[in-house]
Image 1 (tube, rainbow, N blue to C red):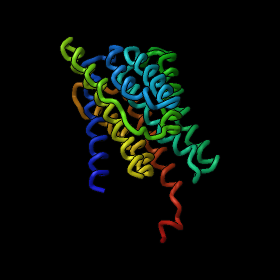
Image 2: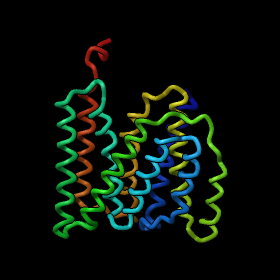
Image 3: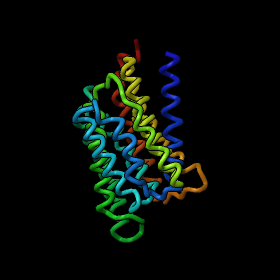
Length: 245
């Protein structure tokens, strides 16, 4: 249990570090930074690994065209998707969660169309689809028996080339996936849905707290409403009979 708790702590730290490192890159991640988790994943991960790679690649490709706060806030879709597909849920709850996310995202894209918010509607749509692909890949994921760690040596060319922040992002993504996979191997799969809500919230909170980042008010309001919807959905999924026991 102590090792599992340490893995959870590592995921939190890596999330904060990864989001903090995205600031200096201005969303411009070189292909080599994305190649680090890709080469680490693909040898044994099968279709789920390719889906995860495609999702991360499409999401990362849109980062330069979007406000970083908007890109990070979209990851709050992950807990909503998990609630919608939970075996304990119902279609009414799923419809409520989807309506909250749709209304918030449509509102943000409307502001982008009017020029009141940076970024573009097409980039937002691509990132939304990419996060959906990432969620599906994570849902289909099966723990890998062993990973080859030689792709991590790709960090050195980035470091020597003065792209330390991009190297850190690649390492954080790889470490985050490795930590979550270790939790699944330790039969703590039930912790993953909780982390799917906590990690996106921690990532966005990092942007709000650190002074070098700016978060537009519409993005903050949208994120808060989606977060509130996710917490409401989690509470509605709880079984009152189990709590009484």
